[in-house]
Length: 456
Image (cartoon, rainbow, N blue to C red):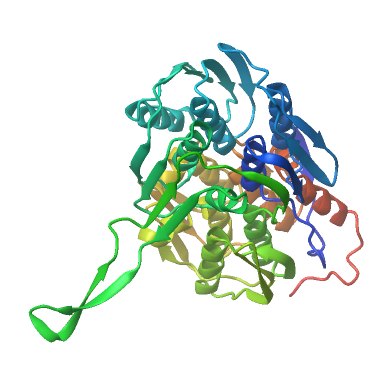
């Protein structure tokens, strides 16, 4: 659908954000494996959550959904028979976890998935699973076939900017009772591991540490080495059992990063309360700070081993930067936000070594360039990233349609902060995945600007 977006008069005094999308979907699927009831609070109430609830109900699990919470109780027996045909309209991350669940249960079934999921990533996942002895194929577009396999312990090295392969393997281990050992060449988001630990699963993980040793040839010198040959190692024990309980889903990481970006674009002040300072958001905060604006944290606390804090920022123009290597890898999910901020930054921003984003999302660089160009912002496609000339003011434009919600979210921010009206084609990507954010911003545009003035 096409939505007319008008400039917001200012940012809200208090932002009520959606629960984290990835954590919500992972917790729902894990809830079907727990002993005892699992209650999710502050969950993401978007379209995919309703779809996952419907899927679990169809499997025979007892799931109740209200505005305030989701309650999940594992069914006594699975409603699906072998050769079941399953339709799942969720995104890449929950789809690959579902595939891991079905493969771990050793089901023979056919799964039809959303056209929004990149089939190339599923090809990569299929190749990896086939090598571990799991019989899965993609005979045609938007369809997977999983067949009964001889399941065995899994030990694998992974080098991916996103955790979809790792999550799939962990779900296989949980559902099959087989052990899983994963070595990550570069650490990816660990929300599923944190949930497994939170639910009492037999999971251990350790990160690579730097060690200084005396030089054997010259005792006056020291040499730097590491204690392991990978960035992180995750081990899931045999027959790992999960238990239920109550869990509060933290605010969506991408949404928190988006609100920081909106403060920069609108040059306004913003405070987010009780935000989870996970790896993805912390890296994005470091990027913003290195670009000239420093987010501040207060009221720090630790809940279930996770750091939380109130997060404040005073938005201003950033400085253009050149990023690549491990820094770019750590920020790969935030590239669309970085691209729209770069348009108003001083100087040119160059983002390299982010080819993994192109693999993970459908046409991200093309969509970013196309929509920035509509505002007369100069940008170019590099082999593995983008170059964006900054120093421009944002004006309303016709944005979209979009193939993915990440890029759509970034240009929704531009429409909110830019001068004049914008027409946004594909607004359902925002309302489906960020319903609280969309509702909050639509309410702001109908408010009077009193006490909500912007910085000059």
